[in-house]
Image (tube, rainbow, N blue to C red; front, top):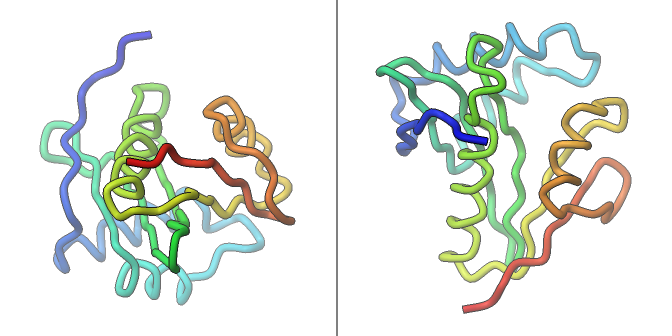
Length: 140
């Protein structure tokens, strides 16, 4: 399948309000969503923003602990779903993890988020713990 190429760049402080609104509009109805948690993630994690035509199409927020990089949030705008944005953000996060020397890439996924769990499983992730999927990374 051919997807539109997105530009992925590091987060800038001026992105916060737009990305927060994107997260709220996408996940605000989910029981586990938290405004405070989303803001904390945007302010403390390493965040990369996907853009299509200079508009935010999504983002991925990661943090590293030792030899593990964990995706805390990967979000695609509903307006940009099925355009490959999620795949490209995941590829970027995987490349970032490999470059950082991580052995594993993990992602936090709610148990009832079947769509997300299926997305990651198709990419080779396996269950590591409740709400956590994991991919073993190639070593340099």
